Amino acid sequence: MMITKEIPLKLENIFKDKKINSIVYEYVEYLNSKSLSKNTIRNYLYDLIDYFSYCKNNNLSPAKSVKQKDLRPLLSHIINTGIKQSSVIRKISSVKSFCVFLERFNYSKENHSSLLSMPKKGKKLPKIFSENEINTLIKTIERHPKKNLRDEALIEIIYSTGMRVGEVSKIKIGDIDFNKSEVKVLGKGNKERIVILSNKAKQKIRNYLLGSKRNIVINSNPLFQNKDGGSLTPRSIQRIIKKYLLISGLDSKLSTHSLRHSFATHLLDGGADIKVIQQLLGHSSPETTKIYTQVSTKSMKEIYNKAHPRSFSKVKN
Image 1 (cartoon, helix red, strand yellow):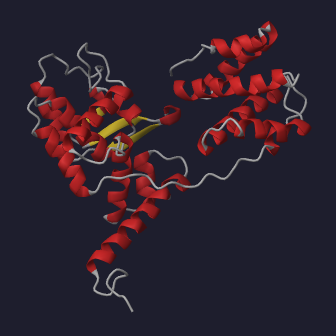
Image 2 (cartoon, rainbow, N blue to C red):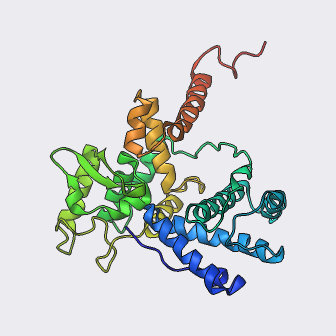
Image 3 (cartoon, one colour):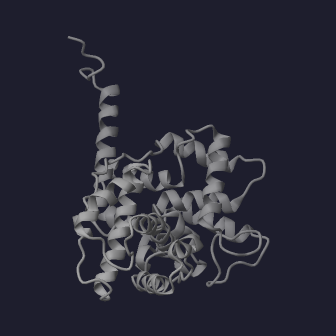
């Protein structure tokens, strides 16, 4: 687990109070104990900058839970910063998390933050690749003048397993079982799961390992390496995929995460059970996976509209 102890200097400097900053350090340890990712903890801390600034401007102590009479002004303050709705929801969630911590460890006697009402977040359908677009992307990589076996294996494993970019970055060579066509994945909250590896992905991984100029076939080594032999970072993987998207002329709104969405949607279109897809994606709640049923329904309507003689576009009156 990656332990995060750094606190943003801007957060420390709002009050410049040793006791308050000591409580914030304890809060960081509390977040680390919950096996949250480094990025999630960092976001929680940066979100507290606005909250601490609000407290200082209103003569409140952030070391005590927000009082009921201050909830509405706090909510207005967050909303009036002009950030998008998803960011408002995240900031409210961060304030609630901090207030829960204060109450749990007896820094405050009561916690009214549960009364902070979250604005409803509209469900946005994920952008996905069509099967033709997937083929175009793969062929672009295969035909690139500077043929890169690593990049071929990278795109194939993301699409064939539906793994998150951060999960792909962590794969070790020993996590792959070629005989069983499986990959052991370390997902969110350090939860392990097994995903299925397609024959095409297996072949491209083998080609990459056999064609490598370095001796990388050691079980403890990262599968996808940079030029220095370290793991490709999630950001590096995103840049690689964006490069090929640009070369192939595909929609610029598509991304590495679109490959994960496409994996789930194409499985659903092919008749896979939603519970199986949930397990393969590593979703803790079936509600998270249900968004793909909306995408699939949309796809189904488009196919119907093009193919059926009595479809919406063909029947006028």
